[in-house]
Image 1 (cartoon, rainbow, N blue to C red):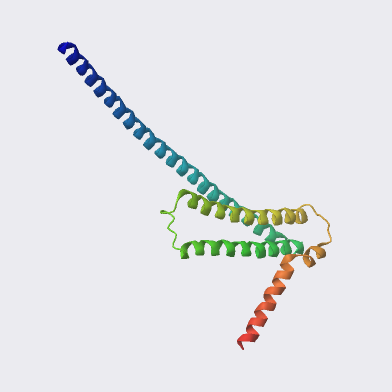
Image 2: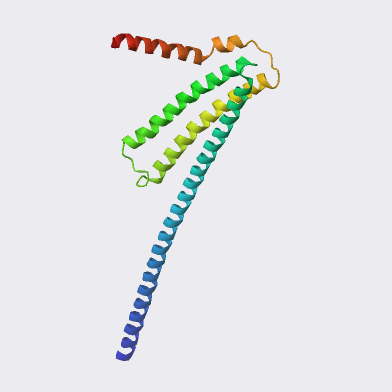
Length: 189
């Protein structure tokens, strides 16, 4: 009977050792899998961030090219079609407001001492998407002005332009800027 008990104790010990070995290996496997999943998720997030940054860069390049086309069109038609100059002035006024907003948001980012390299991936994506949104708005302003300028310059489009000028926010904005500058100068005297 003692031999049977010893054999069964040995079998239980062997079974326990095998179970511990399987448990340890399963734990190590799960740790490796968790590490790989984390690294894969981080790599995926970096790829998404890189794609967003490259899209923003391409959008900035396209915006600059479209603005160059716009200025060339304005230069060619300034004296022949004065309405093109108005679209140019209106677009530049609106673009300058957007660029100042973009500049303020970047300055705020720098002032808040947010280190882009230490920021979380969500914060990085938010920063890129904010810049991308401003660039898209600027590009839309330029595209719309370029479209109407081409209609006037190339298509011989006839239109009562004076109402565009009088009803424009730019007209009011420029007038308000001049009045504010005048009042500021008066208060400084």
